Length: 216
Image 1 (cartoon, rainbow, N blue to C red):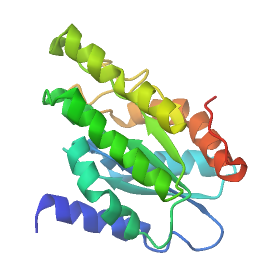
Image 2 (cartoon, helix red, strand yellow; image 1 turned 180 degrees about the horizontal axis):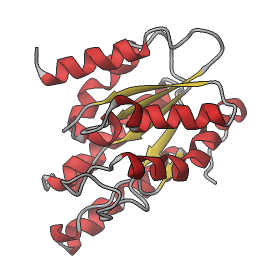
Image 3 (tube, rainbow, N blue to C red; image 1 turned 120 degrees about the vertical axis):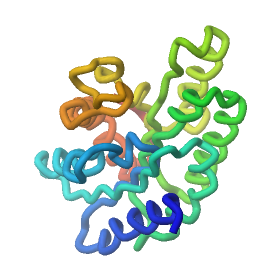
Image 4 (spheres, helix red, strand yellow; image 1 turned 90 degrees about the horizontal axis):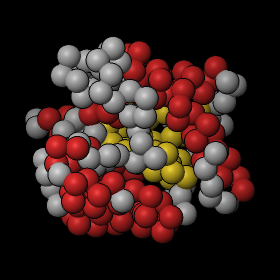
């Protein structure tokens, strides 16, 4: 079984029973930052986010549909499969992709096209989105960085989705908050990400009631 197929089986299995009761279901679609590369399950972003939101009194289930190494092209190819494999339509999708595109020097035009398509499909399905931004490494050069970094705010505006400007805000490049590879957050780093993004998650969930899009 390929690593991608195995990851998909795990992601869908994690979503089994997610519709029990009245819990809101948040589906996290992303790469290793979502999947929890190098972390024990309780330390992953989806698990920590679920625990944090529940501690605030919110009845939520956060489903981990992250695949380590995934690019925006990979995310696009599995979007429908991932959503259709859930017990029901999720109340919110956290879309976190693009970091691997930048690391591999993939054309920002391709990344933009893939993310544009995914946001369009989620809109057609009537699924609210929290869109997590990424930033290109500075060593990619000024032109690449400018083109890549502009993708996220521009698409967020186009689709009027809740936008979190940088998923690794407060954590990127801090050796105390990352694993030995310097790229993947350690449990302390994930905790900071969760704390910073939580107001946006709550606002995005509120949007499921109001039908409006905004950010804190």
